[in-house]
Length: 224
Image (tube, rainbow, N blue to C red; front, side):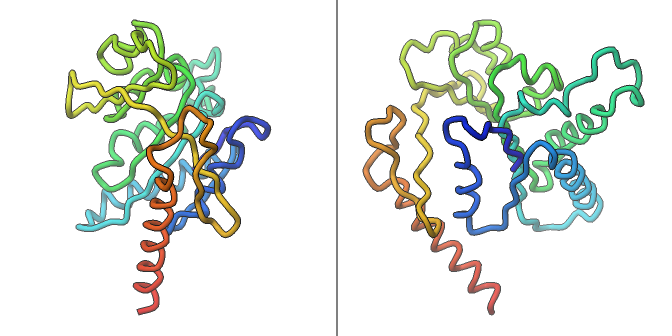
């Protein structure tokens, strides 16, 4: 996880706390760890492509706050690879997006606007098979989901889900607020007054129970 959230912003530290509840190994870094993380995952991508192993553990690269990752932006006035040190990082990210899913490496990206992705790579959106869009202009909506539906969202707290494998099928849904991560890593429901509450009073608690069961199974497999 590359977390570019602000220290005093809403939901600060949520990703770090959530990572601690997962049954699988996880690592979270900030801006200074971006280059090293992309380099390591790109090396793993190349290794998997060469070895062609029949079964691989999935790797998820999470880029939270792409619009703040200035190290990925093209340097102004750059005329060559040497003039633009970010070119190597962009090339690695492009390879991970394009070739990663075939070898079990998947990427989740959050950016504040469509323009933020264009500043890094105009092909980035096309390399993401599944996309989630909020209210935006008609032009941005067509670029993001090949449809103007995101410009017509007329209710608060609504997003649109788009799947490249189902063109023309756009799904409107309500996003959920992040859970409260309690001491010890258990999950609790968010404040019921929030507009993003998940369905039912025990939705996140159910998730926590499934995560705990999976963690126990992994520990058992490791011991045996």
